[in-house]
Length: 220
Image (cartoon, rainbow, N blue to C red):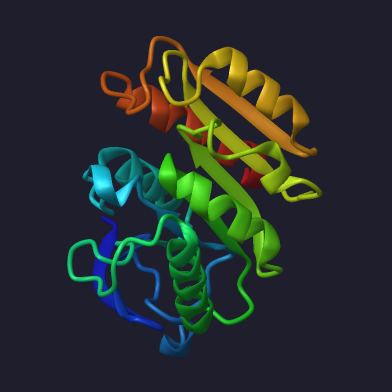
């Protein structure tokens, strides 16, 4: 079974509350003397002002899918959520939180390529940060809020991108989504889950299958 480790992530405003999910038998850090993972991931949660936390079901699914492929997954609460210090900052400070989480994961696994995954607000904040960070090699967005996350935010980003969207996503309608996705640079992969809303309410298994397929395409 996967291991779950509570961790506090240093941040300029104090700390971020985190949960590191590890594949079975994997070391919590490179210093433990065991084999390092091939990749490690930071997973970002939805909007803090609308109940978003690292315990959101889609965020859990993202982390679980990564761990099933041997990738440690660090979930964390943005500033002002749970035990995380600070206050909501309309995405600006939250981008710094993503950077702090990447720094913490890179400190655990020096030299290991990183991924950034995010759901909704987490994708809006996390994917541009991941694009700009040389340590990050792959990006995953679920429920991309295309009215906020403009294609220009990812312009020139040649890193592999996996987008998983519900067919009935109210924050990323299919027409707008496909227009947005067409403007993203390659390499990229889009999976639309039939009938699913923004939260994949009745399609959690289909979400997991789409994530698994995308990760298999990348990593085998």
